[in-house]
Image (cartoon, rainbow, N blue to C red; front, side):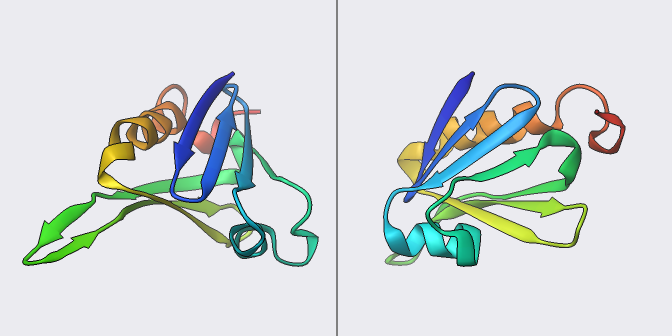
Length: 106
């Protein structure tokens, strides 16, 4: 099991299952909606696409990065991260895109 920590989110990934937990009530509601008191659990084959937006500094504003997970049922799950957490979350994105195509994993 590999653990990744982002901005107000904690992700465990064992190669086949993503277990996503928010750090506070607001982030839990943003992730899971009505069932906010439960972690969001996704199988790898439910993730259709992964897009990464890198954090950057523009003028005087620091912009956080994010990983967008697009599921097979049409949902978009955003995992935000700060510049100092970049390495961790890029590791998650690399782990999700490595191996066989996501639609073919069981």
